[in-house]
Length: 336
Image (cartoon, rainbow, N blue to C red):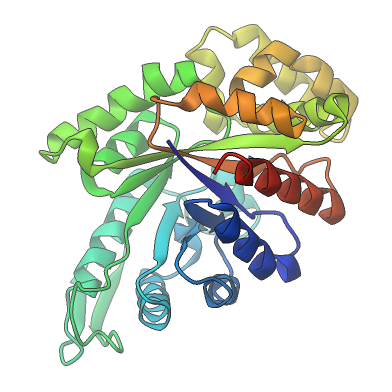
């Protein structure tokens, strides 16, 4: 099993140096939250060979022509080391915060992925002409694409619900598995839907990279780390878009307790922590000392192709987030 790390929620000024430390520690890949192209360039520039991925770009908040060009630029400048992670986000992320259209999200993101593959196949002397349901592009160039498809980036889809999981298996190179997924959820929900998509595309699991994000809180204070994990997971689990994770495992009572606490007062971190039992939290993430997390990650062996360690940052300052990342990098370096 490969091990990657996400630098999401760390301070932007620390990400290039943390990417270098992750590479030196033996991580297989490093991801970052997805909206800042300059940050990816800085991380790639400060490393030598490690893959760097967007985990994830919220696809509806960018024009697909711009995504295609930005990815091609990174691939050309840094030697085919960029991995494109895409996600739709939630209705709240798109409508309430930015006023973006969130109609038919599965159909829209499928069209974006199809457009990217088409755009990267168009030679530099040709023009992009695309007449989709959501996007129409006429006579646009894709600069620098002298060798079509040579630097086509792998596309990984962030997914938790059945339609998106099937789409990942059908048309994507890999999956960015949701950071509140337990092993039971992965085996009983994620893989069956991904397999359905793979079958539709005539592929097998060998041709697909299933990476699951694993929410982590690492501290020499085990009690503190577990509370950080619980609050972070509870805020995810309160989101109705992710109800499938708890519902599919028979945790409806836990879901209701979390939602009651969250919608009563989302800033009451003690109530959120109390609503999520320790044993349920520790099935859906990892927390504790460095030695604790090295033991806990073993449960994903043989379940997925790779895990991506993702910081439970809701209760963490930038300083604490960076400490968490440093401790995780140090711990993984000891087993590489």
